[in-house]
Each structure stands twice: as structure tokens, then as C-alpha cells.
Length: 476
Image (cartoon, rainbow, N blue to C red; front, side):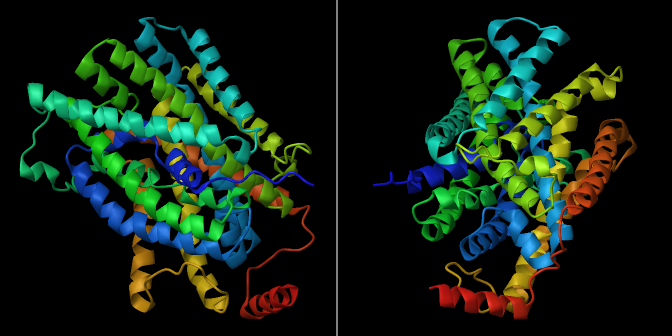
């Protein structure tokens, strides 16, 4: 008798949502907005997280595929936009890995009281990158300990920071002004508005869970429940963690690179508590990148099979079925990105974390914009397809609920890369140049990848949708 394939439990599915979506290192940039962050968290939970999550829940349970976000966009809008989404979705990942790698030497230095020269720091960063690459070689169902362990450790850190912040405030008072007006949004503070993209970024990743569908025992039941329950839990965790950081450090003094770690150090000093939290924080970075690699690599591999990504991404290890070449390419790109630290331009070499992290955020946000028109088209041309979970609004209410998050994505991207004042030019210009460069590379990748394709798919039509439903009915 064949061995029964190992499946993810529902608790592991919930854990995977938290492990993928909750990003510890992104809490500090959001906290740098000050008390306004609480307004923006609640506002964006209502106007972005809920509609985005419900769209993903419907699409993820209606269309059973390995491609997730890419497949939904391709199915609706055709190969051209599918290729763009797959590239943007992929390229964000190695940039993200590289940005997190730059945190390792400095945090280790804080813990052990040492300072690493650039060559040694680069070695430490490259070790992180290639360990993440190797972790991406394993199957999702064989990596439950990563998903479960990563989720537990992330929640533990967030709760610890929030609790320490409350304790600090009771002992020393709040670090910043807590008057009611500080909780209201300040639309004139352009530098703070740039961090709003990080809050939206903090909500991204629910669709990664849909790429785990083949490893779930009941994906149509588990996906919507995990998205809704996990989304609400993540929102609460972020708010609690942000409160802790803001209680310990004034908003204008929060370092977007090391804000969470610096906040803990401010509260407890160089005590064993700080060392433990810092080390656990570094461990969560491995879990976060490994969990994302499962989804990103699967999407890139799936797109390559359609001629929408280079063929190298389409290779799957015959023993594990994992797209190992995609992981290796991630490592190469992340390594090249880390070498930017050798560029003798202070704005580039000294601000490499925020430059890479911002570019990562921008490309991830860009990849989601086509999802909303794709959702509307699939609703229209494939209306007869059974849906386990259905977006709860209809008509004009549905249009408003979908247009608002799409506009928020566009505005967040603009606020991140476009200098809105003269003071922002030095910081944002390298990011803008990098984003334009990678977009141009993406168009080249799209055209070259399409050469191996027999014909271009232009998207689903009502006639094609009806044919597919009829074929599926016969097969049943």
C-alpha cells in the first residue's frame, strides 16, 4: 500500500498564515509614524486588509492551482500581465532576503558587544542568504516545524515587546507625547506617510497559503478560515507590538532598521532578556524567509512552465518536487544586492537596508494591484463557477470595497519612492532608480521568456469558462 501523503493540519495552516504574514522587522518603521500608527492600522485593517483578505479567500478556494496570485491574474488578464505579476512577486523576495541579511551583523554585534568590519559582516550576511536558500529546498509538508515554530516565536517576541513597553511606561512614563491630537493623522508629514506602505506590506502574504493547497487536507475549508482568523490575530499583534515600541522610544528617534531591538535594549539594557529576544528575533528571520520561499518559488516555477518566467525557474528536483533552481537564483540575486555595500557612495552603502527593504515593499505592492481588476473580470466571465467562499458585497458596494485598496496600493508606492519634499531626495532617489531599473529588467525578462511559448493566452472569456465547466462536469 502506498504511503499516505503527509498533510498540513489546520493549526499548521493558521501558523503558516502568521509565519508568512507577520513580519517582526516591519513593526519598527510603522511605529516611526508615532501615535498616528494606531489610526492608520485600524483604518487600513478596515479598508485594505478585510477586502484584500476576502478577495484572496474567494479566489483561493474557487481556483485550485499552484500559481496563486499569478494564476488568478493570468487567468483573467492573460500572459502579459501574468508574466509581470510573477516577476514583481518574485523579485521582491531576494531583495527582501538581502535587506534582512544586513541586520544580522549589527544585531549580533549588539548581543556580543563586538563590531564587525565590512568583509566579516558580508560573510555573515552571505551565510544567512545561503542558509535560507538551502531551507527552500525542502517540501512545505516536511517543514511544519518551521511554520509552527516561526509563528510561535514571532508572536512571543511581539507580545514580549508590547508587555515590556507597558511595564516601561508604568515605571518611567511614556517616551512620547500621548495627548489625544497625536493619535490623529497628519497628512502634511510626508516622511511619515512614506512608512504607510510598510503597514500595507505587513498585511501581505495571505495568497502564499493558497499555494500550499496541495499539502492541506481540506483547502476549501481551511483557506478562508485561516485568512480571516489569522488576519484578525495579526492585526491585534501588530497593534500591541507597535504600542510597546512607541512607549519606549519617541517616534522621531525610532530607527526603522533596528527599532524593535533598540526598543527592547532601551527598556532592559544589555541584560540576558535583551540577548534572548535579539537572538530569537534573528531566528524568526530564517523562518519568515523560508516560509515565503515556498510560495514565491512555487509561483515562479509555475509561471516558467507557461513561458512567463525564465526556464531556469521551472526546474523541479525529481526527489522532492521543489523548484530548487529558483532558490539558487534567489541566492545569487540577494548576493549581488548585498555587494552594493561596496559602492563608495554613502547614500547607497550606508542606507542599504532601507533601500533594499523599500524596493522589496514596492515590488510586492505592485504585484497586487492587478489582482483587483482580475477578480472583477473573473466574477463577470466565470460567474457560473461554484464558489465555496464569496466576497460579501455586490454591485456598487463591491466596487467601492475593491477600488479603495487598489488606490491605497498606488498611493503607498508613490509615497515610498517619489521624493515629496527636497529633504527626501537623497534618501528616495536611489530607491526610485533601483525600482525603475528592475521594472525595465522585468520587461526584458517577460519578452525573452515568451519566446518559448507556442501561443499567448489572452485571458478567460465567457465561452471558454462555459467549456471548462462542461468538461469538469463530465469528468465528475
